[in-house]
Length: 149
Image (cartoon, rainbow, N blue to C red; front, side, top):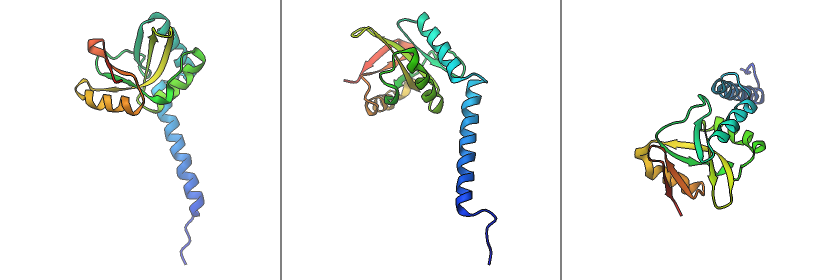
């Protein structure tokens, strides 16, 4: 009778460990040796220099100049330095973009993990925005907000 070297349970555990290791390496490579805290500190400093808002690729710390930015619902309501780590972690696990914007109605500066759609995919961006309960999406090249509600 053939018996596998590893029992099924051990094989599942090994696959899970490998998945965690690969995910960790992927996130670490996106940070280029920087901690989530260091990235969040950089984003915080950048936000102070951009009081009206910004979108940033956290892997390169650069601002994209085109695309349709849509925030994820998972990071809504984050508006302090303390909450920025959560936003950066989410961004690293998803699309790698963090946005900040000033809501003039409550004078709070919000941070979001964001997704960037090509500008010719506005309909898809709007669908994603509705699914994530967003008020608007933002077209970077035009500096234009598209209201969803």
